[in-house]
Length: 64
Image (tube, rainbow, N blue to C red):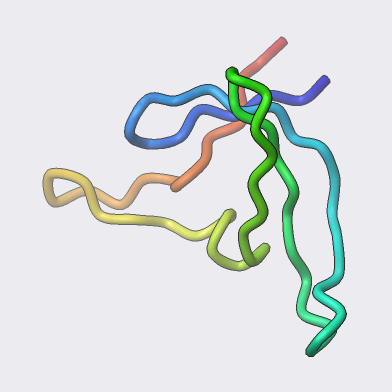
């Protein structure tokens, strides 16, 4: 199981990569601690965001 920490603190489990059928764009499927599934464009999942003037990953992989 691969887990990621969102820059706001939540922990999520990576479920898999997916393709959005309408335009074939790459997506990431991930699960929250409460079991809900989320989907986000792959580019957005892996992008950097600015926090307190620093660039940090939106989701950072957590070492097992």
